[in-house]
Amino acid sequence: MGLRWWILGVKLELSRPACRTRGREKWRESAERKNVQGAIGHGCSFGSTVKTEVTEMPKGMVITVGVGRGIEHAIALSIRNSNPNQIVFLVTEQSEKTLERIEEEAKGLGITLPPYETELICDENDAELAYEAAVSAIRKLGGKGIAPSEITVDYTTGSKPMSAGALYAAIMEGCGEIVYVTGKRDENGRVISGTERFLTFAPTRLLARRFLTEAVRLFNAWQFTAAKQLIDEFLQPFPKDKVPELFPDLDGLGKLCAAYQAWDAFDHIAAQKAFDGVDRKTMERWSPDGQIARNKGWVNKLVRKLQSDKPTERLCEELLVDLWANALRRLDEGRFIDAVARLYRLAELIAQFRLLRQFEIDTSDVEMGKVPENMREKLENYRDERGKVKIPLRASYELLEALGDEVGKAWAQPKLRDALSARNNSIAAHGLEPVTDEVAYKLKEAIEPLLNSVVPNLQQCLQEVRFPNLSP
Image 1 (spheres, rainbow, N blue to C red):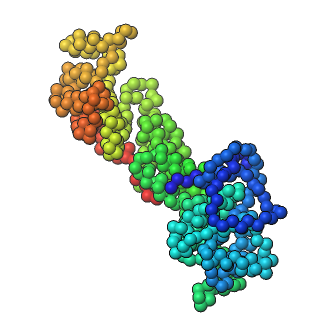
Image 2: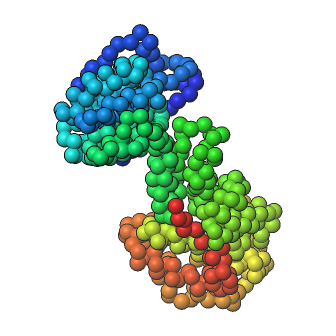
Image 3: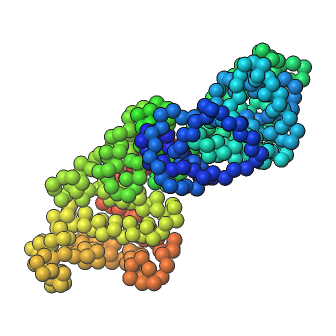
């Protein structure tokens, strides 16, 4: 179920909701009744946009109503305790008669009831119908300009399915408060008048737990953008300066999502900045084994090298490992086109890395004096209009082979050539064949020994770049 939050604040662009109205209406007009416009509600259609300054938010109340004797006293006290501007009573055909007793009890206690309306629950034993009625009641108050954050749901009386439905609706609709009236009970289990106590809590914390669980699931599936969007949607109505205090876990996880999202997209500088915004407490909360701290250290090291003025520093082992780890994640996700694209680029980088580190040959500007004589004529074919010799993947491996390099010798073996040929014949390159798992894994198996030869400590490095698996 999608969740659209109400936006509260000052001088916002707001829209008057046209909410669907259900149930039996019994609005009692009051001279003090306030008509506060400007709430963007859940499940509403929007009309013309108006500017309004919200100075005081009206309060609403949704109350389940049972049939037992004595419950009118608890309901009247709950109304006085919450002091709402509007009420919607959730009633059945039998419990609607209780409203007269509530009015009499309130009058006897000197409590002035605000305007109220009823919402009919057709079957008191059906929690789903109770939930739908409660949602309708909450949105009905929304149509009166009352935001969910200003609505209290009292689920004390009525059948257990009625209470369950109302409670779940309060959580799902983001109501500000849930109240349950308790106290000493008689032989029938009802609270004795005069002993009432009000137990209240904020359902947003329960909803936050649900959002946190789902965001963690998305994070562990490497769906960082979706996880970040989910967290932002939940946190949007709350003041930014209060979010770290109110929802520290969601706040910290959102920052981690931003860091890993950037890293997974090869935006290492943005990832470094995002990691800098994650404090040690957050890292320890989500990664007691220190994996997030290791990831942060890796990104910092890689960024330093990528920003170096020296080509031999920029084209580094860390970059090769980072690209390999990214390709492995895409394979695990079954995103074979993305995996093949990364593996092909890695095949290019391995040859470029080897030529630069071992022979000081830059494939974007080859110095012909460093090229064996039997390769010079062939490489001359790659000289561009500016006089630079720029060689592609195939020529790079052939040059390494001519230089007697171990990595170049792999080109003489059919395994690498066949894997690259399968890629070239696919729709991801120059052909029309689909990129299957067979194509992707064939290329992965051909490249892995080459990577191991240029990065001897590959397995150790992979531990540093391994993404953490979080627990909510």
